[in-house]
View: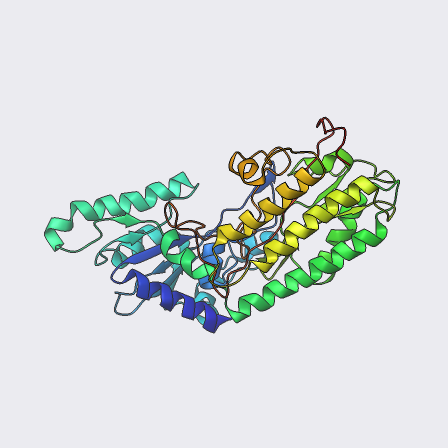
Length: 396
């Protein structure tokens, strides 16, 4: 993959010209007190470097005569590595990750100005780490003050997202291979869940089986908190308690994806506990299935991103009218969004290094994103009939 990371950096540097781009690694996240979650690198940082340690900074300076790619990393420290794991260190940052130069992270303030002072602008995403934001802004302000003496230096800060995320939106063959594996593992886990979801079991038991397969097959674990929602819980879009006992005859909704090699899958399926739909369940299930099939058929290069959602909404609305949940003319019901109490979310989102992956959906008013080869999106329509919803008496 090193060749691919290098190609991505070169592509980004060609886009930013005589500028410098700065990327910060993700911080360690605290679970409670002094216990930390398993580390997960910032997706932009990983996309460009493949580097999976915290307290690191990547600098891309295409205008620098020697060091176009620079890494600031934690140095090797035996005492700390005994407790928290082995570190790459400064030397290996060059040998393994292809950096032209590498420094201990403690030297960032000292070394960074040489990669900024001849840049036209700084590309940096102002993230949640306010202290690091302030550090970059101080360097920028310092260089602005001394600009009259040199006649060079950054005179603007631009966000990295609009430049980099266009690249991330189109997946390479290597990325597609990782995503297919993430999907294959999730498919196996969902099939296992269907086989083992019997009346009397608890939602968390099904969750455990799903996530066992994720890890057993070499995945990093869940791509997001797994949703295993029985009965009325299926109408809570982000239900993650997973603590209810599953009853015979209910529908069980599972929304679970696997992370594999940093790439994610995202699958939602609903099926009857006990193996047989009631007549009412079957009708609603088949409406959603038809919406998904027709929406998937619209996932073609040249179609707009919005067409996928619009297609699903029309099929769902037609179905709601057919069973009597909605009454009226289809186009008007869609225009007035009368379907929203039963279908309140969008049909699709980008998928990749992030579950809700980066990339724009709209290029200004009336200019939706046009689908292109290499883009990956979900297609997940649904109908949610909450327990207190009053349905028409003659709906069936």
